[in-house]
Length: 270
Image (cartoon, rainbow, N blue to C red; front, side, top):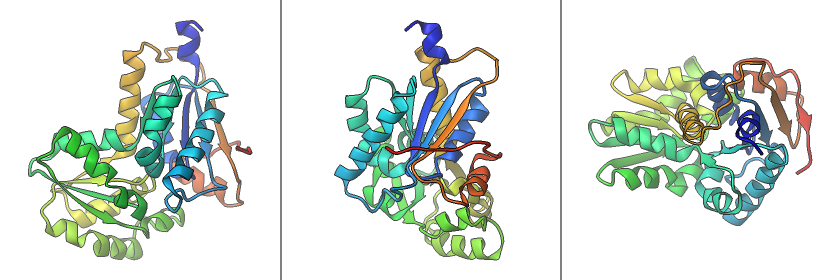
């Protein structure tokens, strides 16, 4: 395959559900020329309750599906899969593989001034200590404080991202972190960017929020440029969306996560 053919090949993105569409949104913002294929494993969500062996097996199946679509780069837009399956995916497949944890961790380590970083995520992501490890790999002197915020996921999916209910939940979850004097807070779940304004309001302007979706898009841009495989063709880019189970409410919820309406979704069996 020539460089031109590789450049026009799509970016592949998978998640256990639809939260990864916040990553897709940032990719499309940053790299509007790129073709993209998204797979949401909605039939088997959530991954956080599964064993590591099962998460790896599911992730490899998702990767094979996307590679069958000829993707040039693979994005694991799932915090659980990023924490557990990245080494196996990078070993098994030749294309570059990017997770959502390392980019966010590096950004937080780079910008903290107090050396105190907070991480919020689902219980499984927090238990994995994946963000803590990512930060310690580049700056072991930084203190990392973590908090699971399980209600943020249904709030995002119900579109209750602002107002009294969202603020009460945020105050309950984030009060301890605020009291610790952190100056950076990582949004360690792909659902959480939808609650960004409420989280910022509760934490105050003195705390910088790190959106892992934004940092992942920047990492993708860097890798494409380094490998000289960015798509410079300004013709209309193609986007394909696949799910392993399509519910009646998916289209409306997915549109909020992506920031625009998805015209067509295809159900596939992995």
